[in-house]
View: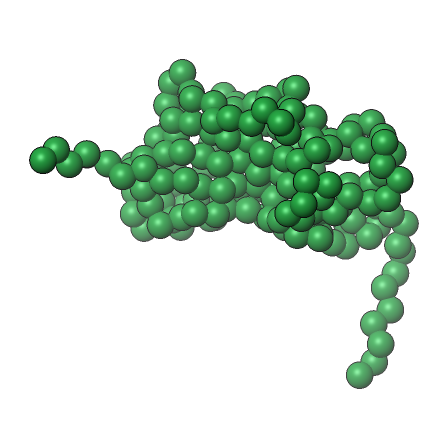
Length: 175
């Protein structure tokens, strides 16, 4: 019996799927980004694999308003080669992109999943969610050797979003 040398794993990186992810209507181009922070990767990798993990394929994922997705990779503040991108994203044609050369993720690296949307034809707000009319901004990294990390995502800053739509102050009722 031949046992393989490594187990592979999947990491979901990007923007946490939630109603905090908002995309205004009538926008020919709107960008969102989700961060897999260096603190998250540092903690997970140093505990198990200080020499890093090897990414060999990436699936980029958004829904019907998605027009482009990029998975950016940073090390010590310097941007590395894009891990994956699709500047002409089509919800109906999603597939894993197998990398020509495996890319190593080290403790202290960080990843940004950057999504571009078009909501010109929409009259209401598009919210983050599971439905195809809702949105997501995710990338799925296939890598080895497997570590105990399945999701590395961020949530948008709700205060920044409220300012964007013109909210100046929030009054909290006294309880």
